[in-house]
Image (cartoon, rainbow, N blue to C red; front, side):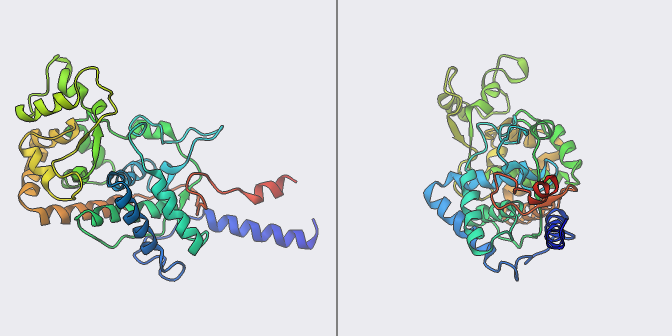
Length: 332
């Protein structure tokens, strides 16, 4: 190999190593020098999405949950399938459910124009989730940044981790505990369902065959049950959506008030009030919105600290991993 090629090879290798090294520590203001307008650019993309389709910001907020719980907050959720990789977008908890990936694309495009190759897609998810809450009336907070993007994704890992709408509080407590999240964190973070909608598919069993009884969930308020029967009659297109709480465009504590009243849309929501270990937090948050807001942002920050221990990079396009020039050079 000539000296020039050796220098080029070493430079490319150093670039690859820089890309695949994990961030040492997450911190607020991580892009203050390298991309000072990063957080503002993401918020502008979220504002545009909110105007265009209010439901979309709720969808984007949920990306943090579905990304961070599967091998850490690494943007793996955003990767499209390839001939050699089955990603997470069509995992059981995501298919026909997660949506609005184009909002992340728009934010990333703006960042690439301003600061190419600097801001990770994993960090875009964290910023966008925060903005979804703040722009709909919820708390605002300083996010810690500095994550890397994964080099792969795993539908199997997502299927093995993410809970279904049928999950009960006992299962959810154990799941959250496995990530170092408390019962209080679980209840507060479930308040993400203060905004957005869910499909009839997720509640048909509650309406017509709860626990194999052939009857509806007795925890559902009778008046609300009538509303749900009209929204989701047997034979309905199960992609029809219903509101997750009574104020689906406003991030507030109405979600908890609805649970107390037996008006939770999902089984995994209503179970938080029927289960003794979580009921007290539901009551507290239903009575004190500020306490809910404080607990929610604390939980979001803790969830955001779930980082991957795998090699990573800063993706140029959130849907695909970067091309790897060193591999091509080493094979020549």
